[in-house]
Length: 78
Image (cartoon, rainbow, N blue to C red; front, top):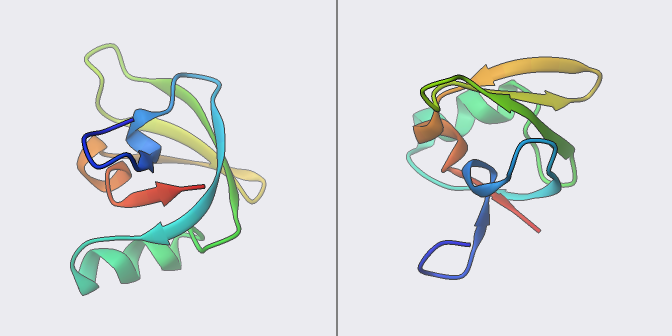
């Protein structure tokens, strides 16, 4: 967990799972993540991290997507 006690997608360990609670950040980034299917109520699984940590491979809605850590930090989980 981070300093403000919110669980973010970027905080999950490989194999960890959560449910999207909210998308934080600037409107342009929020819209992009929402269009990718990261909407509240969606179950996401962090499949793996690249060797240097970035990007993250996330499974949601029957597909896998690569996200930068900075993008994953905008996804708040329940």
